[in-house]
Image (cartoon, rainbow, N blue to C red; front, top):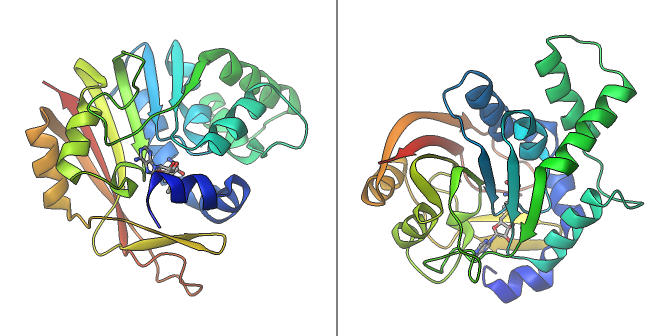
Length: 252
Ligand SMILES: C[S@@+](CC[C@H](N)C(=O)[O-])C[C@H]1O[C@@H](n2cnc3c(N)ncnc32)[C@H](O)[C@@H]1O
């Protein structure tokens, strides 16, 4: 399973969030929050590229940028995103993450319901667009032409089937303004598959840290910093990787 059709048919947003977007997976949004709040990364426009049905990165970055675009291939994920933005009933709940970043920004352990509501309003006002994307296209946002000051992407480029990892990194580079930033959280070797509900999705190509660095270099990025999340073996066998990598780059 890894084609566009497989994702459209078998990717269930609620299952994914339950299994993969709890606070125990805060490494990527925490990194975004640290990078923006310390000024390592800055910009007015932010793209969450391959957002899935997930809002943790938006909760983290929204105070630091003017406009956010969320791009996602799968229609049911875009639907979950727009339903949350429209404040509809029975949507996926992001309060734990919102609380986490409100607390960090306020430098206080006290978080009131009012401050959570203020953050939700901010998130909703900063997200200007939820659009489709396909990582195998030279312009992944086709037919929209756009570049961004900062592009963040988590566990997406390595999941796409249909071209090489290096080509997909070049495609992603086309979305970043010259002098802009690219922050990638990526499944490292030897990951080959991960589970969502009862379905196993493949990572079509396994890449080591060095493979990632070569691809980023070739695509015109300077690497600013890297980090690594070591994972325990999952007893329920939901993922066969041992680590996830964070790579922060600036486009030349
Ligand atoms: C593991 S989920 C990651 C979701 C989210 N970014 C996160 O970190 O939780 C994999 C994502 O890859 C996306 N994906 C798979 N093939 C793709 C492709 N060809 N182009 C763009 N996105 C793709 C799926 O739609 C899905 O959102």
